[in-house]
Length: 261
Image (cartoon, rainbow, N blue to C red):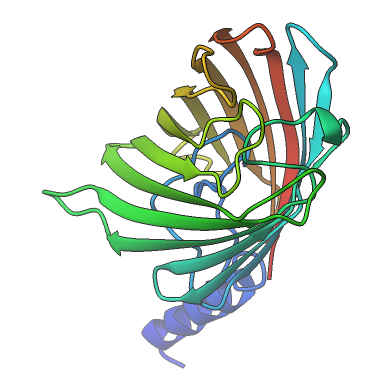
């Protein structure tokens, strides 16, 4: 065999050996999904045909009232090119004390569609639509949510903007009939280019309170996503709210895992 043929054979062998370690369809720690690990997302869907099983535990240590813990199982499916379908059902440890759209046990059905991949002139843009079915504790009416998402890269740094509005189908008591939410965030790959296993994310956000007549919840969060294997991503986040009603969060925290298939 000639030297050039031998080199070609070695390159093909190396590529084959690398395949099981990092397949073409792998779960990407740099693809940011809602609450994984903080309350924002980027404008990109998972690849077509990919399935992600995600789960997390989120605690909210409120300045007034009991600490609430949330379990967040979620399924994400790349149904089409640039389109993912999401199914989620949050479970709260204090279900009867929850006000607002997100009740414990509600079934959340969402679709994220990326209609523009980032170019030199334009950022990546996506829209996300969610329907919340009243399957939970003290839940009434079908709630809907629409969110616009923008992601722009500046070298390795990525900037993300989320702006959304939630419309309650059947507000109860002093609950608002609808509420807006806005998030500005940055993400950065740590250790690049020698390592590409971790992404750091930080955000500031504001959202209208669940009850009428109260101040906006305004705070900040920071999180980390770690690529454990090509199919497993771990995440952790912390945050606090420095403005808002009396029961605003003194400390927020998230621990989660995502597995791709």
